[in-house]
Image 1: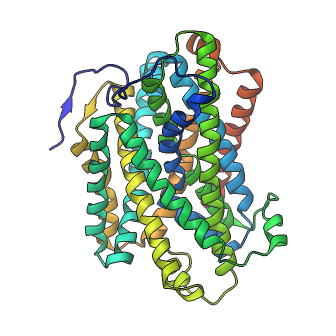
Image 2 (image 1 turned 120 degrees about the horizontal axis):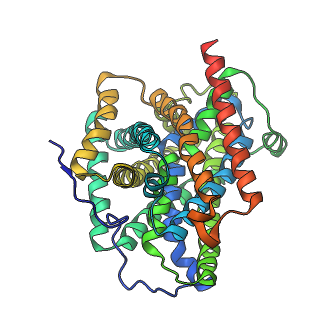
Length: 426
């Protein structure tokens, strides 16, 4: 039974201070160490939900939705930079700042939707890991889901040794995903003209709109917005405005590198699917199991195995990151900290139900990403409101152009989700 500890630890206390923290780590020499938080956040942008939506989009519509991946990735860079800046400026996680800034009723609403988002996130992560274990070792899906959930504990145990071992483990799993798709991509025939056309905005009916919304939900992840601020506030302390701005530039460079590589992975997924499956007679390429079989047929068995390994790395890494983000959300919004076992059980249960009752796992993955896209505004709007306030941010307050860009992005997401809802209901 889950237990609730009502003791309120120090801000972001669940993210232990790394050994040997150097208070004056600034400038370009700080950039390598800033990659750790950025890659932890970036793993949320290459989770199994991305596999499902990107391969489904490429197989069904070719390169048509490539522009969505590019746009979502640029938005992710902006959002994660703002989240890192909020943590750096305030010394607190975003949920903690929300709790101290907004009215209690607003915070309760933000917390409840964040918990629903956490469940949808875990659904994708656990299902992805379960499918990968089934493809690699033939494990039944429910058992594979339980194994994926258990791996999160192993990864989070690294935090007992400090924040950096956890960051290194996640970065290593990210590298497996990146290398795996680059190796596959060089073997896929790419038609440059249709690919270039895919960079121009366009849709082809409700199905493509649903996938576009799913891609957005899979790329811009609400829990990564909350988590990045917590990782930053605990890691970096800069007493002077000049040092804070230098650290912010270092974090911005880290975000550009990590999110840029995540964008390469996402684009590679769609390009591989478009090049091998679109218009082909290979069946069931709208499912992850079908993609695995399709890669074996279109390329060879090693390509299929490599796909399953990248999916497994994604499921394991994102499962640990998602659980950590859930702790940040609960501790920040309501000053409560659930045991890791209780939190894992809470978010793991829906995924195990889906795997046990026989619901199509890939369809559940895509649906979870659409749910996540509806949760983005509830994280993005507060982030914009907070980072534009000088009383919150001090000398790191947003410039007007940054606030305008973030507000336009939030409005576009809300409008897209509203149009999708109206289309589906109508």
